[in-house]
Each structure stands twice: as structure tokens, then as C-alpha cells.
Length: 454
Image (tube, rainbow, N blue to C red; front, side, top):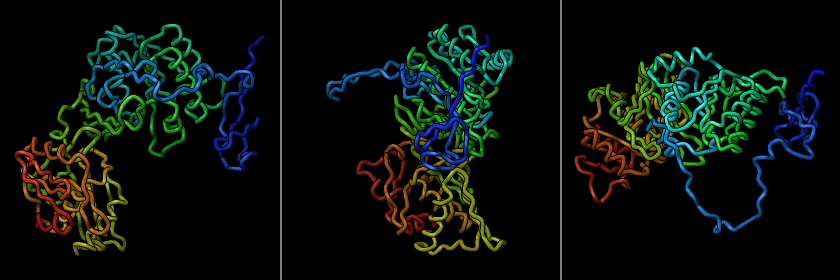
């Protein structure tokens, strides 16, 4: 007799109400489009299928719990270890997201090859055949002798392989290609992605396997992307970078075993991704000190100071509504800075197109970039380059004040190390002990900073 196929139910994301079939409105909370397909367990009342990862334990005082650091296994790639907080931990579930073709599979295959000398490794390929993965390893000049390869997309077979081989580290590439027989929806749907990640995370926690999942992020922000499972995993890394450039950034957005907002900088070569020990010099390799509308900003990404070139172009507009375009920076913050520039410095741009760009594909989110953006705008508006050897950082308020930025001394030391001789910073960041080799100019208002560069 053929095995009866597992049934599925539809569960509301908002209130948890269950329905035997999909419908537009939830019968419990009356919310629209909140029902998603989930696997139905016939013994759900007696046992839960995820009960194995929830060990019962009595309550205890927090002071009595021993704080023991988890042992870390280095990946063999320094920049990736920096983002992870020193390496991988047994039982850790890592999600690496990014646009297709940005380099996720290449980086993980390199890491597996480096770790396979000391640990057993399994690579589960759901997108490429075994021959395609072998060709990639040969092109990257890797030694794949210690890597086990499984080309499979059915979740149940993957779980059986993990239970049979018990590898130290496993990579699943990618989670959007997997499907479970317990659900009827197509691979890549919200229900399939969530179910597959939950089952794999349960297996990793129970057996102590370090699990790395690869997820794609679509430009439309589809629900089947990795964001629907970020709460299940321990670490979330995002691959950033333009596929038309060689720079790649790996940024940590969530890490239960380390710090967040750390970044790793890579350069894409014909032999794969290579870590960049001095990313500031790489980003400034094409910088010209005589360029109008260009300003060097000293950013702070996690524990690493980073020098980035900010470019601005202010041009006469021939349209009723002037354009405001920002690449790598918050466009809403650009609109605010233009208003501050008009109100407190008398430089109007209501009849001009304004374009701002962070060179190298870097995305800058900290407010300390405000002063650098303003000075780049002033340089383009006046058609005059900024003084040579100048680096800038500082946040700007609506009243025109320049506010301090964290870790100012580290930023200044990085600028001095790369040969910059002058820095315009918030007055609160001017330390009593000067940094050797660089003149620090403290300003308290936007007009003071502009007066220093005119």
C-alpha cells in the first residue's frame, strides 16, 4: 500500500489560528493574507516535532550559570573569521544572504576546502550538479579531497545524510531550492523555506553540526528570501557589492556568538575571493586630490576604521522637479543635509540636481558621514576642490551643529597611517593628546567647517 502523504494546514502568522484550507481572511484575527501553509503533525497534541531541541530545565539564578566561551573553529579565511567573531561554533546555524552571483558559493567552497584538513565537511548543492561544483573547485585551485558532496534538494534525504555522515560542518546551497514532502507548495515558497530551515536547524542543534545556509535576496524583496527565517538562525551575514566591481563586503547583522556590524572586505579574482588586509587603501586607489566634489570620509565599521571617498555632483536642473539621487547613502538624510546647508550656510540647491555616491559599492549608514557629504556638496557647488590631504567625519544636527562621532581617535590614527595630514572633526573629538602626523581641526558648526575649506 502506498504511504499516505502527510497533510498540511494553514496557520495565521498573526494569531496562530489554523485552517484546513487557504483563504484570504484569517477566521481568528480577521487579518488579510496572513495564512501560510505548514506541516500538520497528527500527534501534535501529544508531542511536538521540534520538542527535541527544547530541553526541560528548572529555573536557576543567572549568577550561578557558568559563563563558558564556546570553542571556535577558524575557517582559514581571516576576513570571514573577523565577521563571525573568531570562527564557527559547534551547533551554530549561519545564514549567508546576498544577490545571485555575488560570490557566496565561491567563498563557502573556499572555506570548506580550508577546514576539511582538520574537520569533516559536507557540501549540499541544490542549484548546481556535482560536475559543476567539481569544475568550480578546479578553477579555484582548491584541494577537494576532504569534502563530501551531495547534489540533492529533498529535505528528508538531506537530513538522512546528515544523520549518517555526522559531519563537523555542512553547507546547504541554497535554501530556496529545497522542498519537504510534508508540504505541497513549490520550492522557494514561504512555507517551504521556513519548514526546511526549521528542520535543518533542529538537526544541527541536536547533533552539534555547524550548519551554513545560503539564501538569495531578490531585488523585489520577495517573501521567500532569507528574511523570513532570520529569527531561527544564530548568525546572519549579508554579502554586499556590485557584481560589476571586484569589491565584496560581508557584513554581520545578527550574531549570537560575536559582535554585529563587523565587515569583511574581499576582492574577487580569477582564483576566487581574497581577503583585503587594508581596505582603505583599496577604496582610495583611484582617488584624485584635485577632484571637485570629492571628500574622504573616515567611517567606522564595527571595530575597523575605513576610509571611503564620498562624491557629490551639483548641477543646474532643467526639469520642474530637481533630482535627488543617493547611492550608498540614505536618500532621506541627503534631503535633510541639503535643507541644513541652505538654512545655516546660505547655499541653496532648490533649482539644482544633486547626486551623491559612496565609491566602491560601500553602503554608509552611520550619521558621522554627514559632514563629509556636506563638504563634498560645497566643493561641487563652488567648483573648487577641497584642500589636499583632508579627511572628515562628524554628524550634523538640524540646527547646524556638528556632533561627535564614536571612536574618534581610531579614525584619526587610520587617516594618519594612510598619509592624510589634516582632518576636520567635531570639536568634541579633538583629544588632548594629538595624533602624530595629522593636524586636527575641531569645528562646532557647519559654517565653521565650510569656512575652513573655502
